[in-house]
Amino acid sequence: MSINKNNDLINLMAKIIPEETKTIFSESDYLIDLSSWFQDSITQEKVIKLHEAIENHKCICIEYISKSSRRMRNIEPYKLVFKQTYWYLYGFCEDSNEFRLFKINRIASYRILDKGFNYKPIEKIDLKNESGNALFNLSKCCNVKSLYE
Image (cartoon, rainbow, N blue to C red; front, side):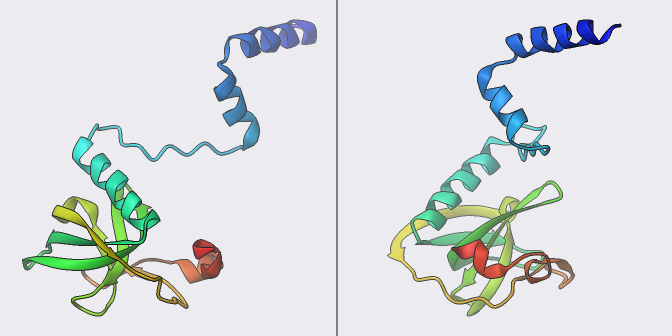
């Protein structure tokens, strides 16, 4: 195929690509889609509602199922984390008085409370799973302050 025909083909394809798609493709070399191949509407709803709580600085009460127990916890939600195919909630657990990582699909139920909270300063964020193994350390890959500005 000649160069002119290649250009004609590219121009023709550009005409049929929706405008919003053109914008997406022209803005970055990366396209990241965090949606699941499986439509898990329960997890999607939890992520949306927990994000609202984070944006509005509202505490939440969750019923959390760990490997060893099932209990209610009061949480100040900070971040939603997507790691390998799972969503996590990173927040300050008022019951244990420390930051914790909660797997979203282990949250049996939740309530967004009227109670607000102020962000606590964090020097580094070490995200560990329930076994204590590090998932990743955000202070190693980026400026933690920029995550909260």
